[in-house]
Every structure is written in structure tokens, then in C-alpha cells.
Length: 243
Length: 81
Ligand SMILES: [Fe+2]
Ligand SMILES: [Fe+2]
Image (cartoon, rainbow over all chains, first blue to last red):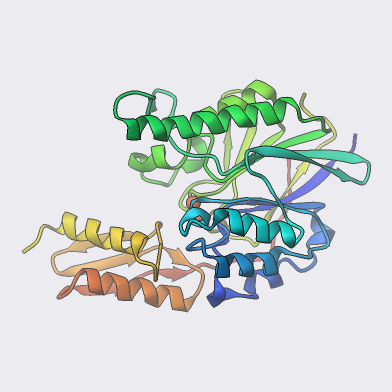
């Protein structure tokens, strides 16, 4: 099995006002990486118009693009339409499922979706009390369950989880601790740790930190644009996959 | 005078909920009749939008727009995992 170079970014928050800018930054990406992962918050308001900007900026790249949506992309209740527009533009959009991409003899498996909040072990919400609280926690639980299932059935040489919300606290350092429960959930990490992955990529925490790790030892990277300060970062997965 | 904490909270909510901004990552500090806005956005238009929404949410206060434009440089060294 050979090494694989993966480009990643999140929180590009595109809109008509910055149309064309991000596309320019992707020029030559095919010389740096073999695939681009985009971890949600593709738009600002989640409108169809902004979805079109995203489709135009990320469509027709010389390398495959895998994306998930973020909370901003849900804001105008057009998430399904946006996902469909992106798929029409040739972008793979994950929604709590997985894809295997053959890359020159190596199979890259990517599983994931938007994810959700709830907090981290010891300081998290539980499915108890008012229906609103239960619904919040249940949403994350169901997502984690679907990721577990997707990962279990994912047959690939390298396995990456792509999320918008964070699976760990490490990569939130810099955000006010009071809002951690809205930034991610340990249930996402638990699912990945149970089934195994080489890397988890997420965004959402604009004030967070790039590098972290799950309790099970999977590397976690927060690639929110304001965190990385680059048009994208490239991670090179070496020949030793995790199974 | 209104308690500064409530003013800051109202401005922050407005920035998150107003269709012109929908910005969740702006830090708002109120000191007396001065409002300080900090954070990073992608373009000048968004920077101004934030200032407009903050002014409307805090009439009579002086708004200092310290929001910066997000500098995005070319990709750096790859990381080996
Ligand atoms: Fe974001
Ligand atoms: Fe987000």
C-alpha cells in the first residue's frame, strides 16, 4: 500500500460577495494532493444562490472532492437542494454514509457527515428530561450510530472520517469552554475509535486549534479556514493503514 | 444605562441571527458606551455588514470595528501522519 496525500479545508463560507476568490486558491492542487476533503460550512446562510457559488468554485477540479454540509448550510432549509446541486457538479457529498475512491491503485474510504453537538465525556448532555433536550442528544446519537455502521462496512486501504462538528475537545482550544457542547460531541470520536480510522477531519470551531487526538489514538485535525490560515492543508497518510 | 453584558449579548445574537451577517464567530465587548468588535471575515463587505448590524443593535453607543480580514496564504508544508 502506498502513501496518500489528502488536502482538507472547512468553513469556506462562500457567497456571491467572494465569488471566484477561493477557486483561484485551488489552482495547482492536483500537484499537491490526490483528493480534497471539505468539512462543511460551505456557505454563510445556506441559500440556493450560495450553494450555486460553492458548486461553481469546487466543481470540475482535476481531483475528486468529498464534502459534508455544516450548520450554516442548513440555515435556509435548503440543505437537500444544496447537496443535490453539489452532486450535479461532480462533488461527492456525504450524509452519514461513506464512499470508496480508487486513487491510482489505492482505495481511500471516507465516511462521515455534518455531525452534531452534545459535549464531551463527563461534561455532556444526556437523553433525559424535556423532549427538546432529548431530541438534541438523540440527533447526535443517531448520527454516531450511522457513522459506526458506515465505517464497519467500509472496505478501503486508508480510512478517513469527514465531519463538520468536532469529535474531541483538543481541537476546540481557543473557543470559550461554555460553548463546547455546541461545537461537538465525544460520541463521534467513540464511533470512529470503535471501528478504526487513520484520520478525522472537521471544522466548525473557527477559534480552535488544528491538532488533536481521540481517546483511541486517531489523529484529529480542525481545518476551519481561520484556524489553518491556508487555502487548504495537505496530510500525507503513510503506507500503514488502520483496520 | 443598560447593563453592558446584556448589550453585548444582544449584539452577538443580532450578528448571528441577522440575515445580513449570520456571523457566529465575532467577539463583542462593551465598556461603558464603547462597543468593540473582534474576529475575522473574508471580505470588506462582510466587515461593514457586521458594523451596521452592531450599530443597529446598540443605538447611541460608539462601535469600534476591529474585525480583520482573513488572510489565506498558499498551502504550506504537508504533514505526515
Ligand atoms: Fe463555520
Ligand atoms: Fe459551523
